[in-house]
Amino acid sequence: MPETTGDNRIKLRSWLKFLTVVAGIILVPLASSFLRLRYDLTEDKRFTLSEPTRHVLSHLKNDIYIQVYLDGEIPIPLKRLKRSVGEMLDEFRIASDKKIDYEFINPSGGKDAKQREALYKTIANKGLNPIDLHTGDSEGGASQKIIFPGMIVNYNGIEVPVNFLNNSTSSYEQNILRSVEGLEYEMIQTIATLSSDTINKIAFIEGQGELPEIETADITMNLARFFTIDRGVIGGKPGILDKYSAVVIAGPEKAFNESDKLVLDQYIMNGGKVMWLVDEVAVNSDSLVFGETVGLYRPLNIEDQLFRYGVRINPAIVQDIECVPIRLMVMNGGTRQQVVPAPWVYYPLLKPSANHPITRNLNRVEGEFVNYIDTVGLDPAIRKKILLSTSDLSRTISPPVMISLKEAELTPVEKDFNKPNLPVAVLLEGIFSSAFKNRTVSNLTEDKNLKIRTESKETRMIVIADADIIRNEVKRSGLNETPLPLGQDKYTGQVYGNRDFLINCLNWLVDKNGIMELRSRELKLRLLNHKIIKADRLKWQLINIAGPVIIVILGGLLYSYFRTKKYTSHL
Image 1 (cartoon, helix red, strand yellow):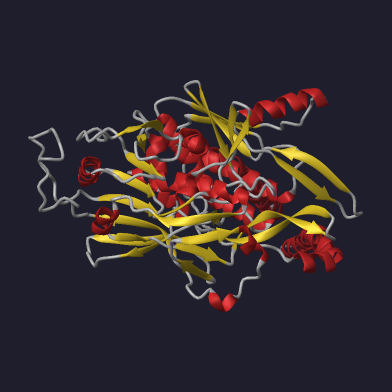
Image 2: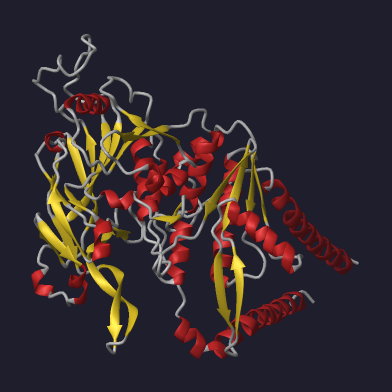
């Protein structure tokens, strides 16, 4: 009888343990679903939202609906990108108190060819960039499909596209990684702009022969995603620029008068931001159609003003061995002409700085007849950062100079290109001294009550020694003019970093909440060695398929052995 009671107690304890485990399995996940406990254990904190992002999301007033067109049968690297997008949107949804909702859409799923083409066209018209993906298989076959790696953000009836993939010259895996690094910035920048109560205004200055509207149409259209864009003359009117968050001076050809300089100076003194795109050497590129042109020094009467702010644009043309090729018509066999690419040292490929949020992970920027910049002065109140520079193999020539297409037929001699890393774009931040300090200005303005500020508030400006960086090509057919994409080579289709660089510049100038700092985020690349994987494919397949099964079987055998041993000892 005592033995029976002991057996019952053992069985009761066993059942109690079993029921406790089952209850724990059910209740712990149920309880945890009501708790918002989230821990990011990754080394680079890839699942942790920044404070600026949390601030924007926590202050959303209306719901946001996001359509992500990255679903269906896609390559593994893009599946990783899709997973990262989903994880980021989950974090956004939690931080916004469920004001963000999203869905993944396969634009190629469940439709006939005609419907797919119509949907592709609709998505592209909304601003998502398609990629024509060629994929191969182990048998050597290949397939082609169109993918839209991006999303459409819907807020209060307004739709704004966000493209995930950078148009990078890096490897495919590197490009995916860079895109993952930039996800938080790309998403929150768009959401912050859409949900903001006020939209920053930017003015393109006219009146000094600046680039015409059609030649800045592409950058204007892309900036319109973030800003309200105006154009107009200063007219020597103090305060006319005060309502603008930033001002763009793109390619003036005529000298500034002192009245307009005063307006610009006082705009800066009151905290205004300016992006200067200025050439000190005038080159008529259209004359190259006839085989040659000339470069002439062209002062713009802003040299003293920029010098006071901390930079000097040198009136010299940069030549660089790392450059964009042009197409030349040459004779083949003396009877037939053919077009061949030839390096054109006057169109340098400028290097973006690798360690600044404006330029990090950007493609090379295409320049045309570029000048270069010296930083001047030792004012500790002004911080200077070089954003773009030439390569290690560059040099300069001084005007006046004849420029002939025949130079493209010559092979550059590397030892002659002995002026490396010449600055072409510089960021200035801090407190600036007025260019009109200790000067009489009563004769420069009709406002006799104007009080001149001699020292600025904390502000920023960017000086770029090439106006062509912002200029898009224009396709002309009769009276019709169509702007071409900025920075895109019309022969090869290669996209340079001009557009992204300029958008980042202006976002940096007006950024007040630190969102641009997110572009500094760095994730470590942990890629598999494809050669080893291919060579040891069978071994790793066996380890990954058979390994877990063997571990489960061994675990079961061990559990059975110790359980049998334990209860046998009680008999």
